[in-house]
Image 1 (tube, rainbow, N blue to C red):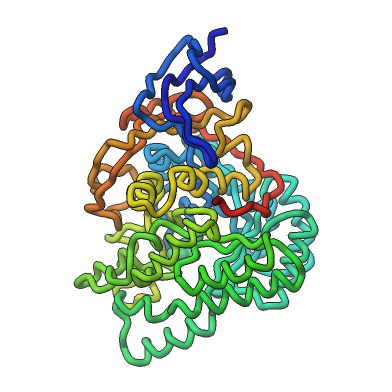
Image 2: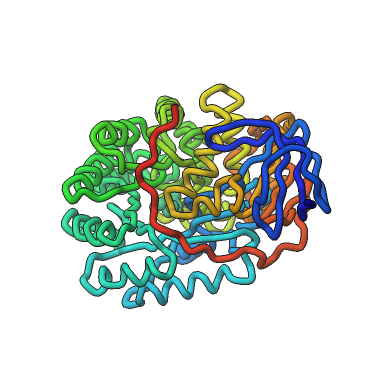
Length: 464
Ligand code: DUC
Ligand code: ZN
């Protein structure tokens, strides 16, 4: 038989295997993996890796923050993601005060519809544990959102321990997954006040207001609360060695304790905050960048399988016109870094090429595990027959130096300026169609579809 499209002779890389084969695609789905397949159209992938489209479990597109919103909208942000080999993003829904969660989801979906270039799903933010909020959980799950974002800090979002317990219990009753931004609010407030009192309000003081112990304490406490009610838990953007250690300790006793880190915490350090003038504002994010020892601990946690996903927390703000809202006080700088476009290549270059993680772990961390954990697998994150033919063809020999000019993110800088890349995607396919071909986007606005997440899978075993 002749397939719609055959990708010939690539090295197929999945979370568990690496082998040379042809991949046949029919009607947007992976139809066969074999040898000497024939296709109406063909792509020669000899010498190249063929992997599942990457899944970014943590992005914030046109997210309202104070007086502004993150600068990538659903078109520009997903287009940049596609250039970098990401074919699915998971963003967040935040209901307005008094708004129903399902209504907020409908509003957020309508922003993405007809604009997103790749497929998208959502996490639902829970900012309180009121009865009417928890009563909506089954309807939210029914609508395709099965993970629930919570915070230990930020006014308007911070939950008390008893609210956490109620949320953990309610969400796990319906087989959902609570995900947590964990930083101790009192520690942050204490140091922020000290810095204000001593007049230290330049951006370089930002990391002093949110020390690693604030993350360590909050992760430890949240894991205890989850254990108390026997609920699964996923900690987002782990940034510190102490945070990773709390996670690994809990995993000795329990399997359903999951963690994510982000590219910036693996590659960038607090040394960036010493840049002159207001430059440090480019690196203001919560949690802040840490020490090189923290980066090393996070790479180790990826290598030993205790941290199972790498996201971006892509939340870009222009240096001119947005970050400078905080020119008087670092506390007014909108927090967040860009990174949606370079994740796959940066992790390959700094992780696989340097021997810190294996080729298969790269695929697990960036493609498969996010899809499995958030209930999108095997449709996403896999090369199994029947899966969506979301595919990245990656040239491991291609060398590039990151510059703001080469990226498509709608923001006026990149924190990775000058980073040397070893390997880059040369083609991105979404449901069987080539959407990026050798650095050119092909007529794709609005091709992305909303994905309903199934039940989260929380019992992933660490890879050997
Ligand atoms: N941290 C950031 O830096 N930006 C967006 C949200 C968050 O938690
Ligand atoms: Zn975030």
